[in-house]
Image 1: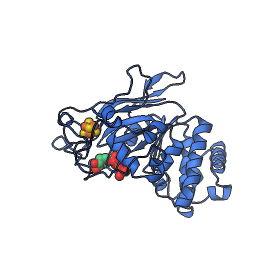
Image 2 (image 1 turned 90 degrees about the vertical axis):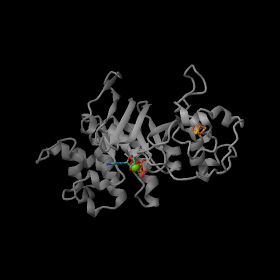
Image 3 (image 1 turned 180 degrees about the vertical axis):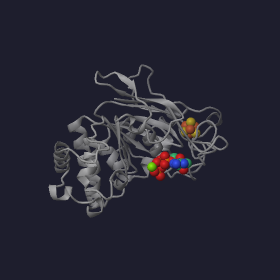
Image 4 (image 1 turned 120 degrees about the vertical axis):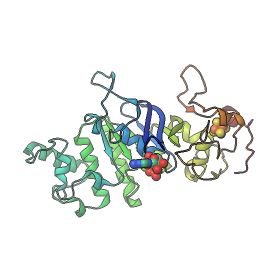
Length: 329
Ligand SMILES: Nc1ncnc2c1ncn2[C@@H]1O[C@H](COP(=O)(O)OP(=O)(O)OP(=O)(O)O)[C@@H](O)[C@H]1O
Ligand code: SF4
Ligand SMILES: [Mg+2]
């Protein structure tokens, strides 16, 4: 299990700070995948990097279940003391360009060792075999493999590290479309085989629908909606999620006959976010209250039975058709 409590990540100096992640709380059950969606610049990569200990955190906690299943604070070191691995869009970031790829896979098994013991080499080659690369390919440098093969190497490396939690930041976005499905399938198989917990960032709603158990939607550093994948993608409650999903016909069609909503305007400057609800400058349902008061994530019921939570003052009215858009989208 991974629990993130009120995480804040600030870039820049004190004079002009940018809160790229501004009070995000989430939890992912062991062995499950939380998909994260949101426009470019909403803070998805920053969230993943902060959880992986690659970006300093301004405040907040990250907890991971220990061997007894008890959520325990993990220090903000790189990789959170070996508890979190990261798979990037660009696999080259995780691989040594001058070494055969098996060495990069063996590295988490024998960190900083110049001579890799034979058993670790054998384990690295075995893991590469599991992701579809033979012993001959294990001897190649990263540049001698295709993009899809390189990403398979980083997946083998993440498994070698035995970290229970893996951040996947657009892991297939740079791959040829014909290779994407195979790499996604492999990621999912590895999750099931090794009981891994994933935070999976993607612009591709179809991959999210296929892989994720839960989905979180980010806007300007905040989580605006979170819940089971079927609920969030099929019955989105937040006007921002509704607009994002309506732009993807294959996913929108799965929900109930929804009109395509265009998102007006650009995402505002993250250094100067709007007061109250950050989405209000683009929201067709915005009311005066939205400028005064920031909505918090809330569910349909107070007893905790509803896992689907939304940060919008007016979502019940919007859902029931009692709120009418008054700015033409
Ligand atoms: N190293 C940095 N220094 C300063 N600002 C940064 C840095 N990295 C990201 N930002 C800013 O933080 C905000 C969040 O960026 P982030 O990369 O986390 O977004 P993202 O949701 O991953 O976007 P994308 O979908 O384009 O990958 C943006 O406003 C971005 O400009
Ligand atoms: S709180 Fe107001 S501005 Fe924000 S999404 Fe809801 S209706 Fe729109
Ligand atoms: Mg990103």
